Structures are given as C-alpha cells and as structure tokens.
Amino acid sequence: MEVQAETRDIKPRTIKSHKQHIKRVLREQTDIFDPIETTKAILKMKGLKEQKLCKSYIDRILISYSLFCEANLIPYDKPKLKYETPIPIIPKTQQVQAIINNARPDNAAIFLRYYAKQQ
Image 1 (tube, rainbow, N blue to C red):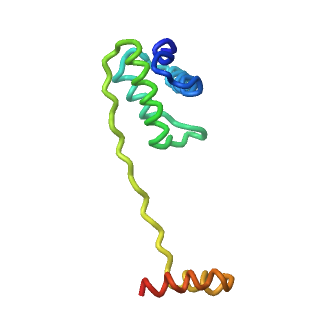
Image 2 (image 1 turned 90 degrees about the vertical axis):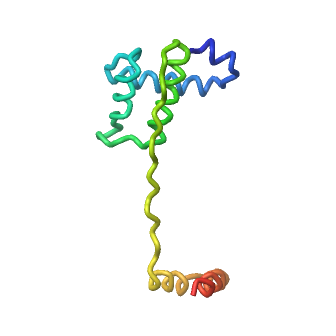
Image 3 (image 1 turned 135 degrees about the horizontal axis):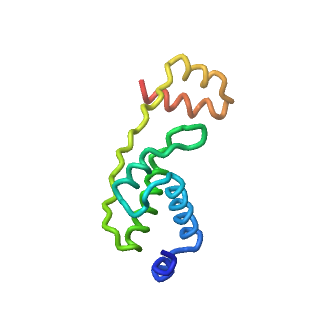
C-alpha cells in the first residue's frame, strides 16, 4: 500500500493514519481479504467503554479499507452511511430574556435587535 500511496503524492501522516485504521480492523479477528465479513466487523466496532463509534470515524476506517482493497486488487464497494442530524435546541422565551437581562450593555443591543426581528 505504501508504494502506491507514494506514487499518488499522499502525505506520510495520511499513510500512517490509514495503517492505524487497518491495524484496528485486524484486531477485530476478521479475515481482512473477505470484504463482506470485514465490512460487517467494521460496522460493529466499539470504542472505549464499549461505546459505539461515530459514523465519521467508521467512514474513515471504511475509506482506509477500500484503499487497502484497491492496493491488493480486491473488489470492494464501500457502503454509504446515513448521517442523522441532531434536533436543534431552541431556547424558550424566558431563557432568551434571561440572557438579554444578564448581558453587558454593549452586547444587549445586539440581542435586542435580533430578538425584535424575530417578533
């Protein structure tokens, strides 16, 4: 993988992170040359304290694995992960008023202008 990576002008730090991801996959006791089994193992990976890994980190591991497959001529289609956007927290009117009331005089004008536009 390093030889091909060097011809692509990939930075050494990027190569190192891809190596670490592949080593992490190897720790899962899976056959790394079987893409289906390896993908299932990657999607089931847990972090510290048995917490689920975030989707962006799993996606980076899948990218590293797809580069590994490409370097070893293994056919592999990387799955697409669905990201869920969190529900935004909207403060109540009393909370906004408390912020305005406790703001310094120079900041209060900004809050009041914004709050006046909303109503």
